[in-house]
Length: 324
Image (tube, rainbow, N blue to C red; front, top):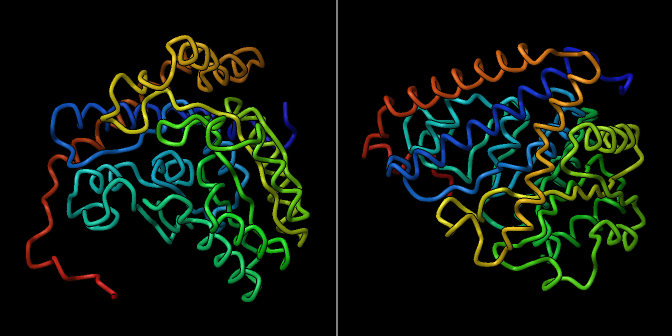
């Protein structure tokens, strides 16, 4: 057991993963019922990355997110009811119902926003890290992104600048093997994205993204290094989304993925692995795990009820909160 993780924190990590899983299942259900406007990109299967990485951060540290951002926001402390209300386009949501699934932010929690633009969080993360340096705040930024985003020019520009200035930022790549429906092997000649760190003279590490404790361990090393002035690290988490690219993806992506591949990754479910670990180490009993899950299901349902019963924004508010 990691000496830096006490029993309370281990239990909290499991609870956060359960919150993400059940939250996303409810989002999918609301979409199927026609209650949710638009689409959402679910985080099922990747819970260990968000929870492992955010567990290595201080409360006032920053994160930047992606179009698949619900997991990051929950792991960093986002309130379920305000997130759900935002997804349903309600006035009580984080962004007053105007941002939706892909643009939730909570600056008070260091959540600088999910982003519908592929690679859109890179420059924001580097800017946040630069501000921390200039203001002497000691804050570290974790920048989440997918494998496809590493082909964007913004990735190379941002990592280069962060490395030159030794900024306190950790680049966490969630390599789920697919950019929408394109396999990584078809859009990159490399197998491991972490090797790209060599071009910028920074550490590049690979971690099992289905193991929350493994993610926590590597990201914590990177966060500590960044906070001490050592500069950025590229952490590649090998993971897998259990669903399709978004809630409307036919057959959860069976058109471009095999059932065998999907079943194989589901056998490595990060939640089941963490539950098994806590049972083995005597941190929790099966009854305690079941009670925790029941509590989470209740909390998520309360968030759904809050969102469904909240009002939509008034038409008169259409032009409020515009800055350009």
